[in-house]
Image 1 (cartoon, rainbow, N blue to C red):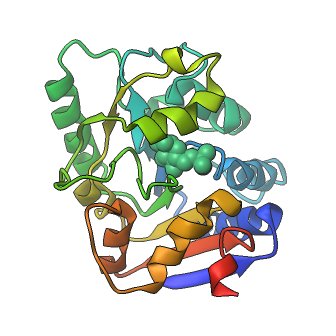
Image 2: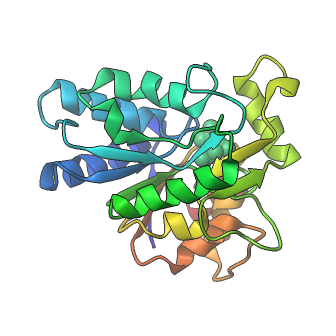
Length: 242
Ligand code: GLP
């Protein structure tokens, strides 16, 4: 596991974007595993800059996202489909039919999970998976639990996650309580993983990467098992490393 402490959010975003840019340059048909949340927004802004400067193209890139809220369709401004269109897809030359996000309005959620995992396999897995992290250690929407689910599944969101994500909604009652999420095994299909974390609220959870413990109570701790993980934090999230 490689750990990089950046000075601030801007430098963190640039370091992460440089990794993704290099992957796209060496493989213009790369499969990018994408994440939502505020942490990767700066990373996406840098990718848009690289595209606008003519350094990279998304023409043949395929993307697959970690998760989606159940009950929100892609037109809903708080859905992760809408978010991805807004922060990345609408600003680059990607073919949207090559961008995959679970359907939060699927009639048959079990079938949606199975077919999403199959889609990930058909794509050959992610060349790189971008991750953020919840303050409780969740990755995607894999919440702390006695048992984690290996592949794409329906997840009940914890109160702390609903509370944390309520800042994106008008009121806490509007936050969906369930989501479709890739499992830890789906995330591990990635050849490389890049996790970004910023701000003081992430300092405690990021400190847990310093020990050698694995626990489903901190889903992100399982990343210690993956052979190619880069964690990039700003100084506030990485304060226990300084
Ligand atoms: C959500 C997403 C996660 C993300 C987390 C942290 O719960 N499902 O993928 O990592 O939020 O978000 P933020 O980066 O805004 O702190």
